[in-house]
Picture 1 (cartoon, rainbow, N blue to C red):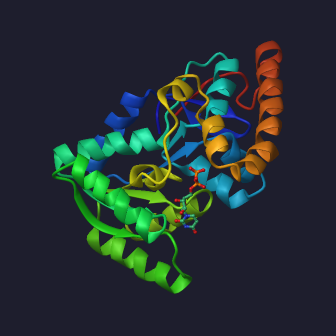
Picture 2 (tube, rainbow, N blue to C red):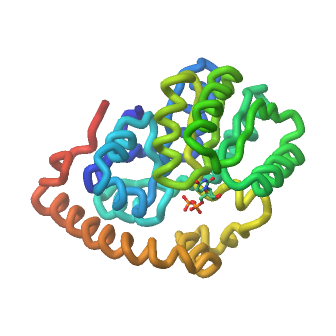
Amino acid sequence: MTEKKEIIQGFNIDLITFNEAIDVLVSKAKAKQGIHVVTINPEIIESAKKDKELKEIINNAGLVLADGTGIKIALNLKGKKQERIPGIDLAYELLRKANEEGLTVSLIGANQNVLEKAQETLKNNFKDIKIVYSHNGYFSNEEEYILLNKIALEKPNIVLVALGSPKQEFFIKKCLEDHPTAIYIGIGGSFDVWSGNIERAPEFYRTMGLEWLYRTFKQPQRLKRICKTLPLFAVKAIMEAVKYKYFCEGDNNGKTTKQ
Ligand code: UDP
């Protein structure tokens, strides 16, 4: 999608700033050019390594942004400057633009109570926001069919999908078939934060790149997920960076790919 990309462990990551990403997405939304945005972290990469279809979806996405601190560090180790682009911040800023520009929005995901509270927050913060369709994230296959039709009918400019990974990536793939002209972003637990049910990590943790640690304190059930993926990802990131630096034998032959 963007000019500059770097491959991390077989996944194309866009080298782009937060503001550039917002500009790209706003202009695409206005031009009705659909795009799938993946905000990636080491957990998603590790699970996509074991799932060919998920890997394909990620590598075909229009924008793959460095959400996780691990991704930022892996890029930095290869000498690429990249800031963290948290999906929650990207989505929130995009909603601010949608509010200003009259772009329509659809919210899919989380339980009904969380979804309603998140919507309430967004409507309070963005007075002119046009939420044309929303649905909780717990639906059967039959209900999914209805949901996809509804999205295709309402044709929102922006669809925020908070189903967690990989469910959100697979869902977005289906949405794109029926309504290909929207901006789709998978945003994990963002509605939980906007609803006030889960507290966002304080500024200190965010600037130190330790948001994942704070979330693990708050939701200890995440620990198993982190332990299973992070050490493996970290070792491979170091090996890849060493290989890249000394032998120029990275996945992309030591070059930043140009598209
Ligand atoms: N979720 C959902 N449907 C499902 C499974 C999960 O809507 O079938 C929601 C869940 O309620 C939560 C979010 O998806 O709001 C997942 O959040 P998580 O913190 O796991 O995502 P992350 O931010 O780690 O990607």
